[in-house]
Image (cartoon, rainbow, N blue to C red):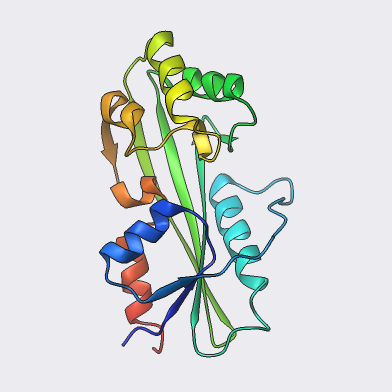
Length: 188
């Protein structure tokens, strides 16, 4: 049996995914500095930040599982975080347009003072987007809370993504397939 989950994320997409998995969870948030040391690979960055988020709960958790995650978008080795302005979001989407990029989600499970960290990578193939499509999306959806400036489940994802190699839910923000496998094996 999977213990109750403390989801340390305000992401409505992660919450929706856990609901779809029929998981018993509660959202608890703590402020965490998401900076990371220079020299880490994008995969290491995602896992490092996810673990850092989990460490904030180490002293306060009893029998629950703390679930933390960090999703990053990476193109040509460059990490695209969350945009700071609408213009920055447009710039990011122009960078992704017509190219392949990686979405990497680092996940950390804290259970009984043990950390279990893992990651998933999905390759996303964007078709060439027009400036009008990009600007209209940014104006309507205001994607300042999304790594890489887009949500796969929103209009730009529906019209712009030609294909994905890897997990769809990873691109949404939580690799549910890998997560479930880790959760059922917590006590092993």
